[in-house]
Length: 190
Image (cartoon, rainbow, N blue to C red; front, side, top):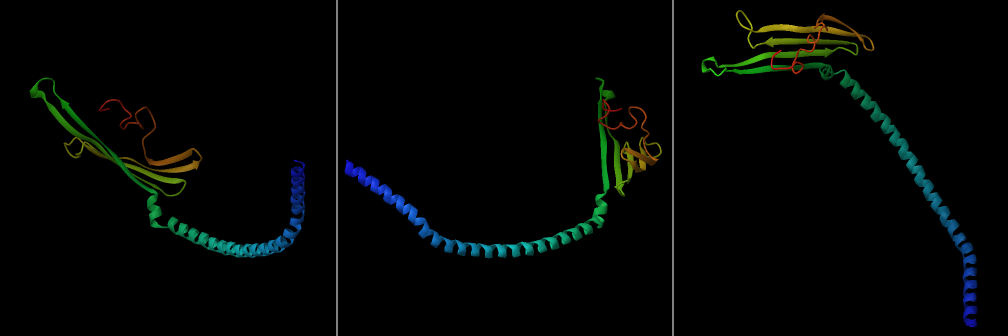
């Protein structure tokens, strides 16, 4: 047992001696290898710097081209039409009235109104709005319908949340004057 303990002690001492001696041997080899690695890395860094500079030049050229295309888009006729709005809506009524008497059956379809909206934004402060309306499908002598220019006005921004209108527009008076279109009233007909 003592021999075994001495052998273990010797093995520990030998291992410790090897560990202390080996860094010096490896350090001499490692320093040369590390220096070679550092030089290789420096070459890679220099190559990457050149790529970054080349990419910066390409990025600046691409940015200039993008700005030129954006300027062309803003000044194109397509951009002008993007500021023009055409919209519309219609209202159709179907009435089927019978009071239990077949002689009094009344079926009626009425295209009550058909409205076209045209608008254009001239700039950030000036806009044009208009509404053209056809009521009851027919208009003329003895016919129930009407054709009217309901609104046509220019709106100017004076300040934030303050504007002026000039032209033909609905006067904002009363509960139904501006909000007279379906579904803002209850029932089929107002």
